[in-house]
Image 1 (cartoon, rainbow, N blue to C red):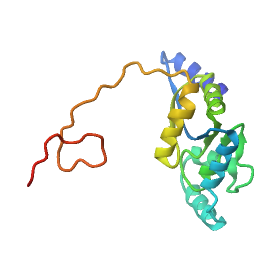
Image 2: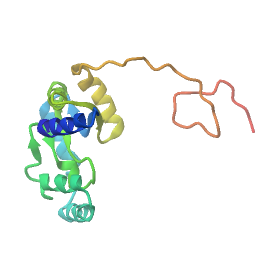
Image 3: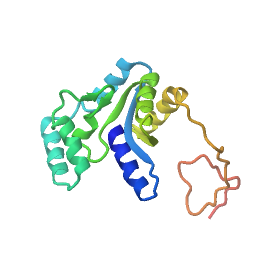
Image 4: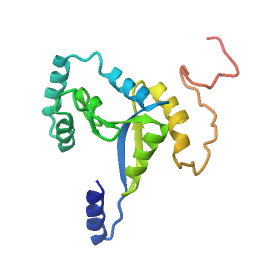
Length: 178
């Protein structure tokens, strides 16, 4: 990755341009490395070989170099899914697009993120399953190990209510009957 980033930067510089780099990864972070790997295994426990084969067939029809590279990582098989230290390709067995996950405890996943940042990746899109659990785990177990800071603290804004407001933290102060 470092070599590719250097090549792209050099080409951009020849044209008087600067580029930034980002990456999207799933995150499976738990209190222990063992717990994180168990959670990764649980994500694909109920997949049968036919489901994986069908998903791989559908992904193979895509005209995407990235998708072809993803398929080459796991070759449609559930064995040897750790393709690099703490980098798991299991999500890509049945999902197109971003199909790798950083797996481990907070310090371990943070170390891998720092390794991606070292050659120049400065934007990270982190996701995972189930979404709410991942959000809490990342906030509680990963963020304390990353040197991140918000440049400004978002301020609450008044809600312009239209129609029904569902599943949010804003509660209307006055309830009207229709």
